[in-house]
Length: 347
Ligand SMILES: NC(=O)c1ccc[n+]([C@@H]2O[C@H](COP(=O)([O-])OP(=O)(O)OC[C@H]3O[C@@H](n4cnc5c(N)ncnc54)[C@H](O)[C@@H]3O)[C@@H](O)[C@H]2O)c1
Image 1 (tube, rainbow, N blue to C red):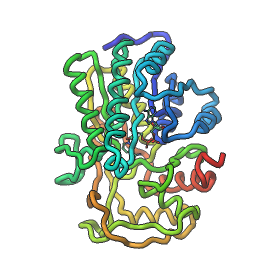
Image 2: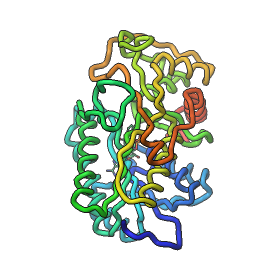
Image 3: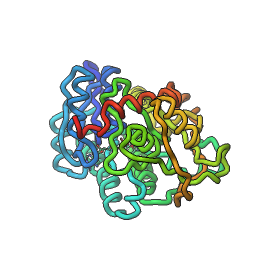
């Protein structure tokens, strides 16, 4: 392992730092005593996030505006800051768009990962946490999903996660000084309980809870539920929703493990409990006190019936377990949505 400075808490570089999951992780890391440096190109986030982070943490964010694909910019960042570990969030994440623009996705998601790792290697930093996804399991043969299940990808976005994991495995095989933690997120939802930061999708939300939130707040008239003829209790798709603050704590636990013990790992970050679309809609209606009108429409190509994690390995390796249930996820999402009906744009 690369030695750590003994005098101060480690400094963590967050790529994609002003995005949804990274901004919550930034606060969790600061609360745990870590120093944080953020980098983002604002391709899918707002500079307003930085002001909100300052307000919530009481600390001026250390931030660099750059693309992780820009080798010179990344070298500059590593030259200016002594980075002990990286959490690599920066990526494009819309599955449908990835099918229409595969080169953008391979270029940004994999080019960015490789450039980040090259900058790390040049500066003797060899610990990285990677944002992977449950999408790497494709359509699982059984449930709950364990980390040793077969992997597959059905779209370019999923491929970038599978190949990203492979790149990091190959790095560790070539040089055991590299320590990598691949975190396979299930379905992140919710927001910080202050209501000051949360998910702010550009255009039509790709995910269910932000869509439901925009219906509840009156930005969209109705929800389309894609299929009610799946082999699930109420026929609608079942997913493992995980509170973004729990997910953020998962990154703190993963970094502690990388910094304290040798070796690499790949773990699921999920709750282990699946909820259907209609269960989520009902919970959101309760949390918001608003009706969520919806229509049942045909299945969406590529969607699977059900997906939920076996979270035992994360508990065993990282001592981490999700704490928040669906009602809390909806309540926190709703607080963010109704206090910021147009996201950061209206700030
Ligand atoms: N939200 C989910 O449902 C989900 C699920 C599984 C995995 N993930 C992964 O987690 C990570 C974070 O997701 P999120 O939901 O917070 O997304 P997000 O879009 O809110 O955050 C990603 C951030 O990366 C930035 N970014 C993109 N390309 C960049 C580049 N080249 N240089 C610098 N910054 C760049 C964007 O501006 C954005 O702020 C992504 O890697 C995503 O694929 C997300």
